[in-house]
Image 1: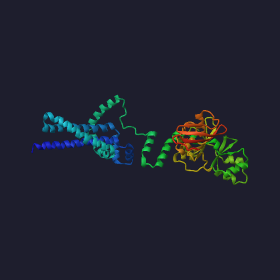
Image 2: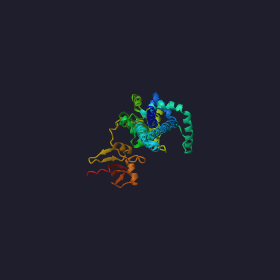
Image 3: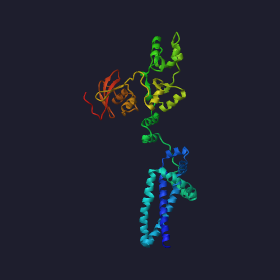
Image 4: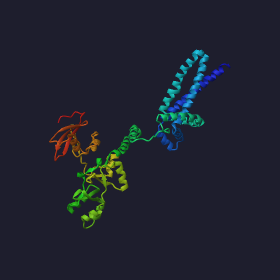
Length: 426
């Protein structure tokens, strides 16, 4: 009985060492696989377990050092004990071979693959309880960990690795876009679209969303006073520019709420209109939307006049235009929804030449290029490199186009359809 007792004790110790090896292996994978952003959120919310894991991950070299010291120690001790047991049963020649084979298979299955796989799938289930052991163990073995890390970090510096602290977890815009896409049902689709639109504001300028100058409705002081008053009374816009003779000569922006002040008087003059108009707010055409959104907030403005590099008016942009880039259209066209895209019976679309390319892409889900011309007319002319004499056909990407009408050097209408779909005969 006394001969069996030490052998039984060795078996128990071997089992304990394999369990410890599984603990260290799982801890390493769980710590490194845990979601850093969820962990940071929980730590900022006061979760003590998350804060403890954050402290360990702040110096990954020390964390890995204490885990590997513990893991190698228990594995080597387990190998020695297994060899003693195997020699007892199989002799000094065969025993080491048997122990190496059986222990390798046992550790591989029960102390490596299984715990690491589980930790990779459910890292929080492993990292949080493991940190309770690893933090005091790191303090206990700190001199040995420091020695190992000093040598290891010196070798890393020779390889060009100078930053040993926890890696930078900041996300780039593209990485954040991927995170939003992969959120799945955790973030409703509508909210995902809004978040992605906010990220895209930096890539879009006011020139991409402005109301072009030929569509700007304003008050021309050169017109008769009766016509101006009729325009003010019947205007469907809240704010209108006031100019003299040409849109480039903008004097100010008139809020129609203020127009009631001089309309209530017996006599109305053009000077009274100018007096009620606020000085115009000009915007460079290349201003990114995220910058302009902040500028509107700082200037306490809701509408601005977009000018090019020569100071000529290109159009105007409103705060609502920028907000619609984020949340989608939430207002109706006060002019009765002036449709520029007309669906045909055969599935094609007749599109006005003045239609904005970005609006077309949004409405039809196409991918027409937006880094060049802003309108359908400009896009077609850029590809043709000449004014067409009459009806012509072309293809841009997977979109086929048939020019239907050309007037005054302007393509006023084009019939478009996707190249992958066969058209019905007309």
